Amino acid sequence: MQKIFLSIFIALTSLTSCANKKPPIITAAVNNDSSTSSAKTDTVTFGNGCFWCTEAIFQLVDGVIKVESGYSGGHVDNPSYKEVTTGTTGHAECLNIIYDPSKVTYDELLEMFWQSHDPTTVDRQGNDEGPQYRSVIFYHNQEQKDIAEKYKAALDKSGAFNAPIVTTFEPFTKFYKAENYHQNYYNENGSQPYCQFVVRPKVEKFRKVFKDKLKRG
Image (tube, rainbow, N blue to C red):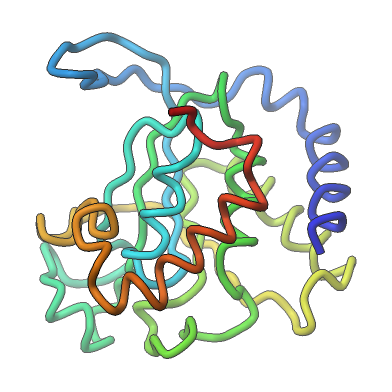
């Protein structure tokens, strides 16, 4: 499967190279050891299952500056975790990822997104069930949507998965940061059973597959 993803990634990168030369960029202040510096960054918002798992994965990526766990795509303002877990608010557990496009591209993040969960199951990842666990990309602009749609179509055509991809594309509107105890969860709660038996295997697999894309040290 890794070879399939690599070939699709290379093909799509060549198709979108012109777009990638001028990515949508915003200026943000980056906190680095209590000092503040200016850096050109971009943002993606992914929903691919429990954010305890996905946060731990994307924190490893070189070029990813900040990862926040939270909620998007719903119809309730400032939802709590308890409300979201009922599956009635319309929100998905997701990540807001700020990254440096000069170190990691949107195309590469998409590859990581689709390889880090099962995008063929509707409203479910493993034992986690409900619309809050849906596979979704909250696109911030038309370019993000177009590239993601091409990638999805190429993956389906290649037969990379045994079933059709059900990932949805929803326009980004609002991101509500989750409660503080959800942030940096795996790093601070690694000894918990869920982390040991669910999160850790995902992290270890990701390290092996994307070893060339990880932060050093």
